[in-house]
Amino acid sequence: MTMPLDTSSKTAPSSICVYTRAWRTSGTGLFAQELVDGLLKSGVKVTFVSPVVDNAEMEQPRDGLRRLRPVREFVTPALLPVRALRSFIRIFGSIFYLLLARVNNRTFIITIPDPLAFFIPTLFLLRLTRARIIFIAHDPVPHCWRFSKRWRRFEKFAHESCYRLSDTIVVLSEATRLKLLEFFPHVRKPVEVIEHGDFAFRRVTPPPGNGGLLVFGTLRRNKGVLEAIAGCIAAHAAGAPIRLVVAGEPYREEPGYAEQCRDLAATAPEAITLRMGYVDDADLPGLFAECDALVMPYTEFFSQSGVALLAASNARPIIASRAGGIAALIDEGMPSVVVAHPITAENVFTAVMKFRETPNDEWVRRCMEYRDLTLQRRSWKVIAGRYAALAKSLGG
Image (cartoon, rainbow, N blue to C red; front, side, top):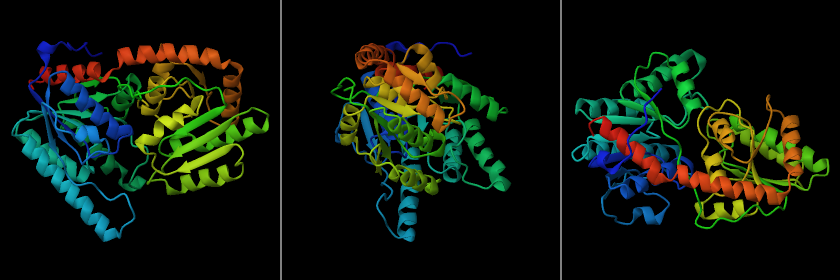
């Protein structure tokens, strides 16, 4: 069990480098940007190494902020050799900027690194310079292994090497910590739990009570998207006045799964709207304004859910499984209906019908109360203060 970190200003280090390859203003990209913002508000000087981000405000000069910007990778169609060249330029640019950042920073916070074949040598070089590494393990086990079973032990070794080369590993929930220690029993580094921060919009509207439901995020198998679609189709057929919007981009490692979602959604256009593709940050508040709840029947999920925090921060209940860190939010009092295990269309159907039994006014009251609690406990200044205290404890 880890001891509480002192988050007073006296513990703040003079400077920290934050690195991520994620630049889009959603999910993991937004996590890094909000962490940088929180550190700056805590009085810490930050060197932020990442490609240019979507959020224009984040790219404005700020006191205490030094920006180092590797090029972005292509997200629009391009010839494979061109895409590969661009990726290599970004990767080696990131390595160069990380080593350059070592001149002014001893402590590095790493979140969403480059491919491990390139990043492990970078970590090794940083350690040779006596840098302190805080590695954020968003997911203790990959959602989808890149190698076949024959070569998987090498992939597992690569992940374990990142942990071994770090001074401290940070996870976002207790469930993540337990899974990481179970899956990597030989890792002897400290594992700290620092919660995910809030993702509040500038303007928050209460659930409208119109029957709208939302599945948001990357279309991955372990998010139970197919089960969510099938369960909502059944609920609509049973007379529930609901309509499910599925908004997200296909998961590159599971291209066939998105097609299955498309085919199933096409069988019931009166109940399901599929918006396949990246959801721009500017469009997200509109999606939330039109929904009463988020549907999250996750399975084989061990981290904290940024989507769940997005719902909590913006006064929306969830229809969700008790997967990973979501269980802790539910136990804390997050407005929810639990999808029973095993995750099936039938169990999603049952949870959706149960959700409809509670009047919307009651959901609004409970969601607004829990939103206040979320913003109090998980403001990015509070979260960043814990990272700053951890960095100080490492001699940063």
